[in-house]
Length: 181
Image (cartoon, rainbow, N blue to C red; front, side, top):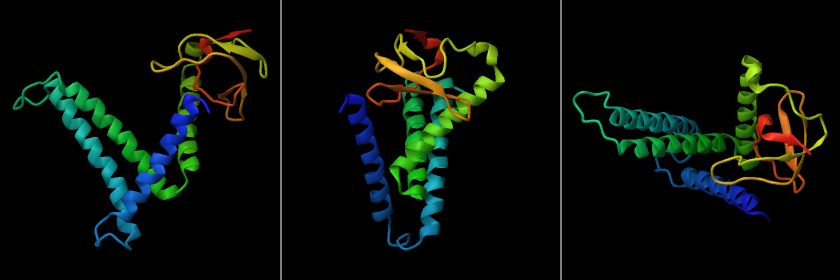
């Protein structure tokens, strides 16, 4: 198992564990009240969003009654990450299936990519390879890791790229970062 696959598996396990913990450790008032728990999970996302706004205000100095704080940038980033985690756990609360939760997140990113492509096709340019052609990934794909090796690329019915490394991993790869073999 690769480091990336291990990380992905660990993240899926943490999502399932956190969801079970949140459902099982609520107060007696919430036990047996699924509708209340549904509302609480969604409301928690809004609460974290509010904390992100509070950190943004501190970082930018928007409120003249409070001093601007440069260190609030890290608080902002942490709060935004909390929004993502809390929203992911809210999705998991409703799906109770980590594969479905992660597939939904992947689908929404793919949908975003398709919308960007449709709204500004000139920015993306023409594909540099044919469907099913073997290509090599060039360059760093994310700040925290890069990929190398052959991949098989193609379109789905929705029109976005599907790329698979020979070992079955699916990195997020922009077309402009790929070149023909």
